[in-house]
Length: 161
Ligand code: PNS
Image 1 (cartoon, helix red, strand yellow):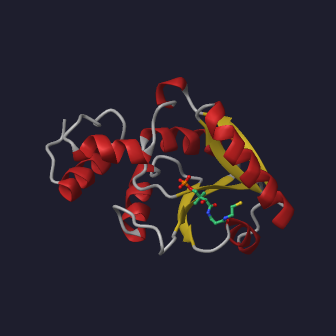
Image 2: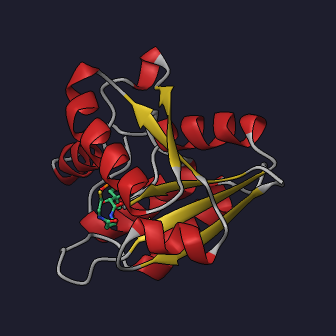
């Protein structure tokens, strides 16, 4: 059984995340999307809300499940017998930090990081930018699933574009 984890904050999940998760689901038998819960970081959505939004977004992919973790990602991987971490790379600027994390993670546990290039149409996409644009009433309807757009609109009080 080849099992992989797709970790992230997913605050909120974007179409770019879903693209990487969907492609990971064709490469591995089972994919666990793991929501990082870091109580010291301020998020727009609670872990439960992020998990729920991911659950809806990943419903079309039967071998994808959603979970959450706090602490080290490598501890989660060991607990779940996962030996592969899938990360999307949007641009060269992502690579430095992602390489550092990949090497640190492989020094901590028996786990490989697999980098998947982000599809070009999502290379500019980040949850932080989606939130900023939505905060000021910009149109993010093409960047997130419809149910996430509704949640963003409710939370930020802007009109969907
Ligand atoms: O979506 P993000 O914010 O880029 O996700 C980052 C995340 C959650 C994948 C990363 O911060 C992480 O793995 N955190 C868990 C803590 C950990 O294992 N730190 C050591 C990394 S080398």
